[in-house]
Image (tube, rainbow, N blue to C red; front, side):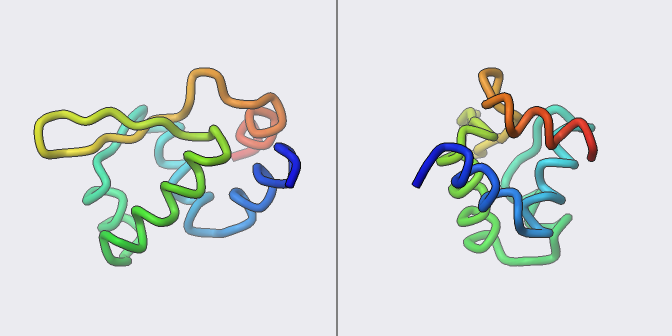
Length: 86
């Protein structure tokens, strides 16, 4: 699968788009916060974040027991172009 395909598939989901949109406006968020936002379980949220991470759209940082996600600094240009419209 090409990089562009991986990015498009990662963003072709309303919950993942909601995560990315939230991170675009909030800078970073803990997994639990994102799960509450989406009204889904912690494991489901983690799966969505894993898909976004594999597409180089988000990155994470561990702070004590919490994991915080933010938009990737070196996000592919295809993803960056799409995010301008959110």
